[in-house]
Length: 78
View 1 (tube, rainbow, N blue to C red):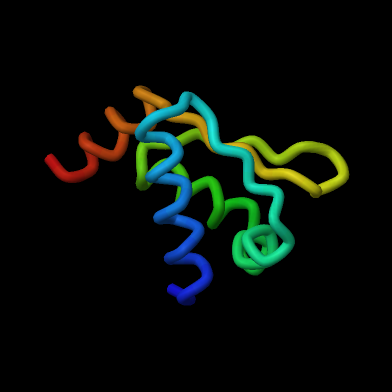
View 2 (cartoon, rainbow, N blue to C red; view 1 turned 60 degrees about the horizontal axis):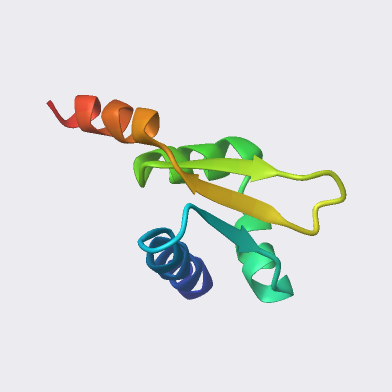
């Protein structure tokens, strides 16, 4: 995992600990996420208990806490 992606991961976790959504709009953060395929981004989000939404135009990627994703991730470890 690249250092930029680790930083984005930490930012998302920090924001989602206090807010229901996290909008990634900074070009460097977007570049770190766009280096991954859409399926990899989806898996990245599910692994952390998040839901991801990419808006048209590609200028913003949104992350939300997702209890269903957390349940799915927890079931994989059982």
